[in-house]
Structure formats: C-alpha cells, structure tokens
Image (cartoon, rainbow, N blue to C red; front, top):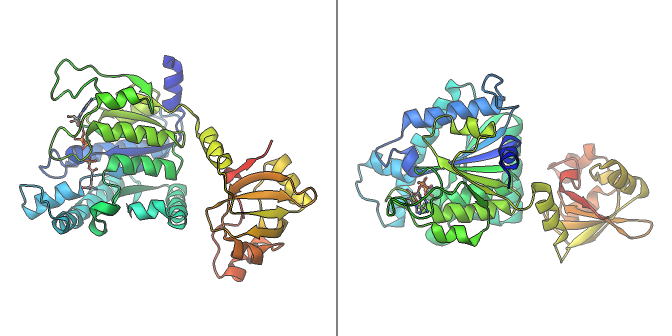
Length: 387
Ligand SMILES: Nc1ncnc2c1ncn2[C@@H]1O[C@H](COP(=O)(O)OP(=O)(O)O)[C@@H](O)[C@H]1O
Ligand SMILES: N[C@@H](CCC(=O)OP(=O)(O)O)C(=O)O
C-alpha cells in the first residue's frame, strides 16, 4: 500500500473506536492516570467536534473502550497482587469501574463533551436481538454527540462467558457499529518484530495487512502483569475488525496528540489495513447468508423505490411475509409481480410483527406493536440489492 493510500485510510475514517489498556489507564497499576485520561479526552472532544483549529477535517464519531477497572479496583482495595478468585476479580472490577466512569465523565465534561457508560458482555454481542439493541443504543448516543465509554461488564461474567480482553471487545464494538478505524493505544509504539521487552533488537512494523498470519507469529503475550492480552490479542483483534472493513492502528498511548495526528492522516505506530472495504465486507456478509429464514414480498412501487431510488423498505410497501424470522435476521425482499429477489437485508421486525405491519404506514407501528424500533422494515444501509 502506498503512503498516500494509508494516509487516506486514516484521514477518511469517520467512525473511530479507540481502545486503551489497563497499564496506560492506571499508570502500571499505580492508580488512574488523570493526566493521560485528560489528554485522550481532550483529543476525543476535538475529534468529535471536528475542531477546525485542530485540523482534523470534520467531525468524527468516536467511541472509547477503556480497560482499567480491575487494576483500579485492586488499588482502591489495597490489594498488591491480582487475585485468582473470580468473585474477587469481579468485586475489584465493580469498585474500579466507578472510578473509571467518574474520571472519564469529569475529563470529557471539562472539554464540553457528554459521555455515557456502556458495560457489555459477550452475550450482548452473541445474541442477535441484544446485538441489535446494543448497536441501536450506541448509534443513538453518537447521533446525540455523546461519547460512549465502554468496558466489559466484568462484575456479572465468569471466565466461560467472557469476551476476556478489551482488544477483542474493541474489535467487536468496531464490528457492531461498523467503524472505519480501530485505534488500540498501548504501552509500546506499535507491533515490533518481537516483544521489545525481551528482544532489544526488535523493530517496529510500520504497516501490514490485517489478517496476515505472519504478524501473529511476531506478537507475544502481555509484558506486564497489569495488561491482559498482550500484543497477540491486538493482532487478532485487527483481523476481527477487518471482518467488517475496519483497519486498525496500534500506537503508543503517550505519543503526543496521537489521535489528532492519526485523524490528520499522519502515520503513527503500526497500521494494519483491512483488505476489504467496509461496505464491501458488509454486502459480502449479507450475500453469503446461505440460509435465509424468510422473505417479505413488496409491491411494484416499493420494488421500484428500492431498485431505482436506493430507498429503505417501509412496511406500507409489503404485501406478504414468508417464513419465520427474528429481528436482526437476514431476509430476502421479493417482487410481487415476478417473485424475483430484489435484494437482501436485515429485518428490523420479526416475521410475526411484520405480518401485522403489512400495508401499514410507519406512523402506526407503535400503536400496532406496542413499541416502535425503527420506521423501516429494512433500512437501506442494511439492504444489498441484487444485480
Ligand atoms: N511483538 C510485540 N510487539 C510489541 N509488544 C509486544 C510484542 N509481543 C508482546 N508484546 C508485549 O505486549 C505488551 C502490550 O500488551 P498489554 O500489556 O496487554 O497492554 P494493554 O494493557 O495496552 O492491552 C507490551 O508491553 C509488550 O511487552
Ligand atoms: N475489563 C478489564 C480489562 C481487561 C483487559 O483486556 O485489559 P487490557 O489488556 O489492559 O486491555 C478491566 O477493566 O479491568
């Protein structure tokens, strides 16, 4: 990839997930690093506003994934050694998360940015319906220019049902909101050819392809007892983020103005470029669904609006619902005249609900179902037209 092209990947990223690790957040376990958190918050606020003087080229939607709850909880409880017992780790997380949320709230407020705490579990991301709900909440927060500060809900999860490390959580969040870029800030300047703590001759890798297995061989585990995943989970996270088209940067969290410089297109740390672009990755995923659970049949007018005007499918254009599907399933949209597939997309309502909504204006959804998720049956962003 050329220098210019990689600068584009960075400068054109509109939706960015930033992940910071425990060792940075808690100053290697010494306690919340107020100055460092304040510094990221300042940059996040400038990015979110698209501050002209900062030269970041327009507003960005930013989400923070922050570790540090357990490390901070241990500090507050006066525990010198990380406990092994799950209930103790969970208690530490509960104590530390208070401090974490409070610190981000205070620092972001100083920079006139509102924030929201979002604690997620693996189950929230694995279950289709909860996944869509989490997605919808995060997108709503972004729409209102509120910065979501995310961590795993350590207090309620045990080892078997854990995401486990926040590099992976960051990638899952990037998938969830279809981010353009995942920035992983850590205590090293990026990925080195070997663990720099063990091999002083290791060299910084400036760029690679996300998913390249050779990179995984260079990466080792955590260098300190504070961090959880080490470099390997970051490289695997980059592969996962690339699944929905997001590229990843791994950079040093203390690099001055790192987030602003990245947004300006400056090359810092290690850039792992996603081989397929965001929309392409998404379309591919939807088209690859072999087993469609159902379909909605639409009238001529709706089919035309979808095909020719790139519009969303509204319930009013639906004439029939086929099969049994849930909210979030991929369904086919069929033309009532020829029966041909117009396209495929994500259903906002289940088949049972959709049957009640056929031919009805969206303004009646709340009345008919007792709630309203979205005015569309399938939003155009979640629709791939058949060529
Ligand atoms: N190839 C590598 N390049 C850079 N760091 C590596 C590599 N292999 C292992 N590491 C280790 O990974 C550590 C970063 O991971 P971790 O401690 O989990 O940080 P964080 O808390 O930021 O997630 C580094 O301090 C380093 O010792
Ligand atoms: N959810 C945990 C973080 C776990 C984790 O992945 O830590 P790290 O490797 O430092 O990003 C906490 O807040 O303590």
